Image (cartoon, rainbow, N blue to C red):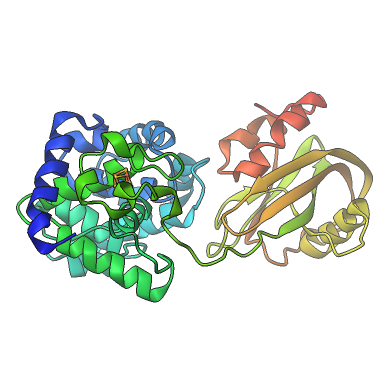
Length: 363
Ligand code: SF4
């Protein structure tokens, strides 16, 4: 693609976008807060999944001030099921910082916004280009793929040199008159036309400028460094009953699933029997001895860098006082009220197993 071709590429891409992009609710607004929430949700979540969450979240927290005033638990609850909970915690912290330091509004300069918790280059560029027309190029997975194919980029896009090349190209291509629309058009093209598996090159509005598309080699790009195998971690958890209630513990604020409630347990050691592991983990993590351990079921769940296989057991409290090792709080809860807590997906999937046993947990 030569520099002289770039204005034509911009025109064709924007004309395609103008003809019929998806009418998504965050595109109907110039409210930077709404655009920010949508961009945070969409970082790790598909549009179809994010739609319902987006409407509910903004129904609950319609302004930065309302979000800032909410309890952390309420924010996590509204995010429950979306995963990557650090996004919700950071959004909440950033809203509080905006109220304290910027009168509850986004600052004029993107650099000041970029300094808030959880706000990276992508989010700052997306929000400031779309809401304020600032000439900042976004680079997300869709943009990376489209640009790697446009250039037939031999560098791996997840290498430092490949990443630099993609960013430089995104900045070169950006339409400075309509940066927000251009960014959205490039992302939309990646989501609808230049898709990971079956790019629709014959109908692509920028095929004339695309080296991989012209050569029929779109499937060869983007190149990536070899992925490491994803490990599977076996885990044992116990649903401990005491006087008709069950014990749940709260994960530390920082780290994976921070602040969410779960049944206590931990990793099964190599060669260890899951039932023995459950008894040991409950003693170590809660200080409690249990009896009558019965298998409740198996739940498999995938996170971004590993998978877990959860061996869940039902058991009765036998002796001891709760002494938490890593968790930050505990509660004895009626099974029918477990659904009111902010729970990780994998824990939520144990609730129907409890219900099948007649233990009164909700679906
Ligand atoms: S021509 Fe094909 S590979 Fe190139 S941008 Fe369009 S859809 Fe992607």
